[in-house]
Length: 151
Image 1 (cartoon, rainbow, N blue to C red):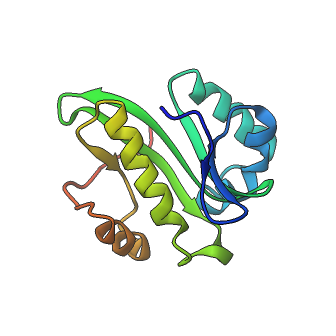
Image 2: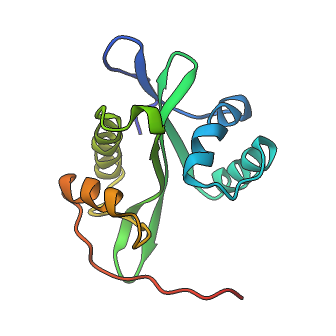
């Protein structure tokens, strides 16, 4: 994967979140997507556990502030084979429709191809109709429903 920050329009760059301080800076934005995360400390601790299992977090930064982010991992299963799974994708509410999600999606597709994945996969709630429209515009197609139950 490209470890060098990607230069974009003035003041913006895409770069990986590589330490707890950077992860903590992403908490408010991640909280917009995952409101059940109760604190920055909880988020950083969960981020560290997931990183140990292959999770990566990439953000679009304006200076020291993330304005969009994506969490992902490479997975392999019998349904998709080796694939690029996007766990999290969010743009801050004040910056939506500025093209930041598309920038991240293009970067995610490039990362997946570079890692030898033939498919990018993500899950989104059935209620996320604005997200569905965005994903369709990005070339993603709905191909399944996911069922679950609390244990």
